Image 1 (cartoon, rainbow, N blue to C red):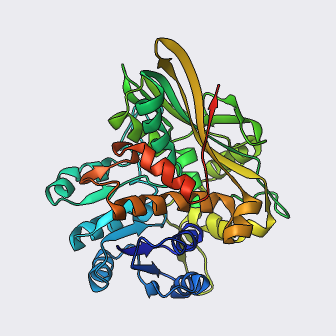
Image 2: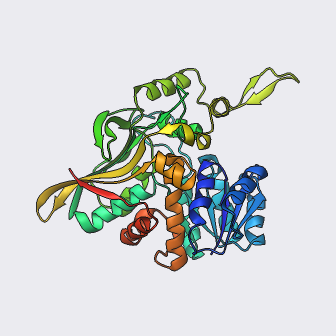
Image 3: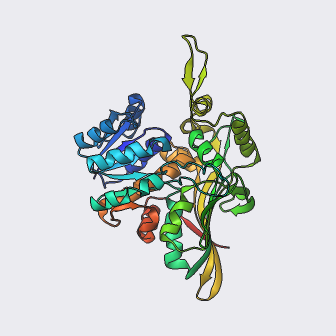
Length: 404
């Protein structure tokens, strides 16, 4: 397998360090707008299967040409969601398969944003599913940790743990702290703003997909591995749009353990208009300059990839399921925990980006060996869960199941 990895930030760098320990690929081209960043990621692994290149992720012809020049079989997208569609289209143009960890962006309903869906996450990718299927090509979308591993857990629950699923909810929580910072997100603030301030989507079988207000339906969820109780709230996320396409459940939600302080900070950014992506004009030394307020916020905060040495604690991603097995009620939580101290010592990567990067590498190996195969635009739920979970354990990062 020959892979083009686009994006050499925190997640992309973690991908290289995880993949370097595995034999399933012949070449991984690491491409980034900042060539020095790609070169640093390649130099760190010291493996001649890796090569650094410069590319603008928004330049479809350039990405397609890079895929062709290196005869890559698959494009792995490790950029932020703004670049999903150009990379998705470039892979199709070049005849390569495609993987991402976040899907094409949503747009709220113009009149009823907190009741009805507008353009949903992934709609623009699923609209082209027929084209991918006719070509016999695969776009595996939402294959990070959340979405990604959480969706694999949903499929596993449906196949092996339940006869009927009443409710399925992704629950994400952590007890991570960052020494020396009052506010330092452990993941891309650009993406965090996008998913936390958009109207959350909920799925119910009788109603379909609908929206609520941001941070709605708070609940306290008790996370394993010593993390403990964390208040979680509704957040827009791909699992709610993916799971019902392949897994039968009466209700599907995604709730994120953000914490009161984080929520109030996001609300303040929204109140001030600093969550907007459309440029505003500000004075500059050489005249007016157009800048995106959200890009300014991101540039003002520390790069999450650099925070590992200052971080303490664990992060947990998981899928809570309630339903019936053999005529009796059952409730479980399937989960994956990463301790930042371990991921830093073992891979030199902070826990959140490492946990995100692990899963697309596992998926690539399953595709390379033929354990997973398919065509069209497919989510992780479209594939058997057991091979993924077994390989995840073989990578040295086991998952857990807790009866509730």
